[in-house]
Length: 430
Image (cartoon, rainbow, N blue to C red):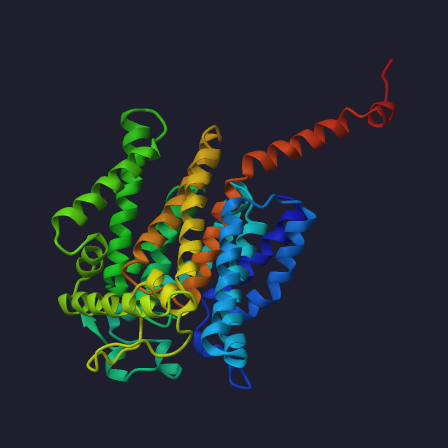
């Protein structure tokens, strides 16, 4: 890569490393709490916009859907909370979602840059993996006790299957597991040198030591999608047909709706957990959450407490898409959801003729986004998880444009090489 390309790559790398810092390092400016990743995203967001404008990156439908979702969520915060609280709550939402999205969209514009990003991000992933393994086996948290916690210290040290639910620098073991597992397909299909690729895969598998049901669900989904691709590539010796997965998903959804007696979403929420009590609790969250959305359809409730049973002492909403609808109104959740689905479809459709190496890297990014979006139905994305999810969506949308972008660049270079001025300056040999 050229020096200029490496300079551009610094932007998403700085954001990635900021995502790995503990939220306890947040700045408190007059009651406004700014965690490290949000501070970095605030700084990088204007540079990302300038990069998009200067490089004339074409805005696509997924871009407009994501931008529309962020803008609507910002306005909805004012409708739910008023001017002062709405500005703080909505502003944080825009930075966490749109700011991080634009960084991925502007700087990770092709598979080659994404591979280099993953290679340079690997040390951070390995550090987090090492902390997770140590915490889980030793039954001793290293980072979380250093900072104030919402719950009691007893709740921090939760043992499951003989292992401590490790969390490293993340606010919860669920967040740590979802973040690390999202790296699995990225490194597995990256096309990086074998040793680098293996280390990346091992780092992502450290998510197992969070002993989180969402991490295990993400592992199962990723393994299925990788096996599906491997069946086509190795057995049939052809590129995979993603449309069959769409048909299978529709058939599964219809079957769950028709035969479970509780619907597809409720079934996923309840059974995608290792703890039956947690499954029941999440069903109650879905019940009270959808009721809240019906009452506050357009603007949501902002950061107010969601109505629920008196025994439900925890105020979390363990479903990312439900959380968006509850907090920022149903249109925000719909726009973001459509943006992610459209991004996946477009990225697959536009890269069919890509070379094998770049195609594999691109599919790895698509799987990471698809798995994260699916698992988000059974677990909460918050803080740095939301930022990483939106950053992933950003570079998946960017990858959908890589063929057109690279083709346009080659044409410009060819025109310059064939220009009369360049021909006149070419030395002639007798």
